[in-house]
Length: 115
Picture 1 (cartoon, rainbow, N blue to C red):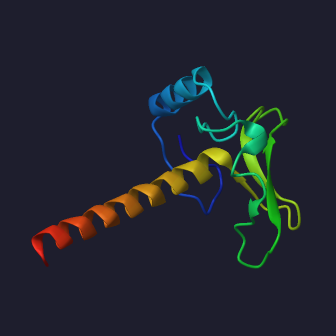
Picture 2: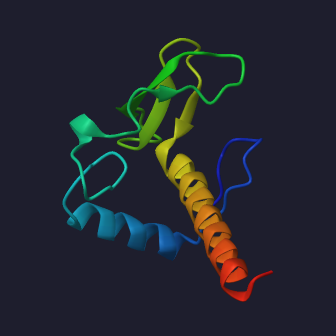
């Protein structure tokens, strides 16, 4: 599966997408981001800053009602109407988390071997 936006190069195998949706739907916790430590009314993605560099607005977590994208979660800025699919936001976020964890691991190794 690829993202339908021209400026997005996101790709995910269809089987992987289905498996992540199945595990997300059968788990408990937030129906917005899939986090197990909170419910959707306390989702940390609600009221996050807009991703547009020229906007100071806040984003709202919403559920699409259009036929083509029915019941797909997205974040929409209340000021500039910019939106991002939640699945794309989570992929980027988890990638940054992994990068940060890797950096911490490298620092710990350097400290242990005195580099």
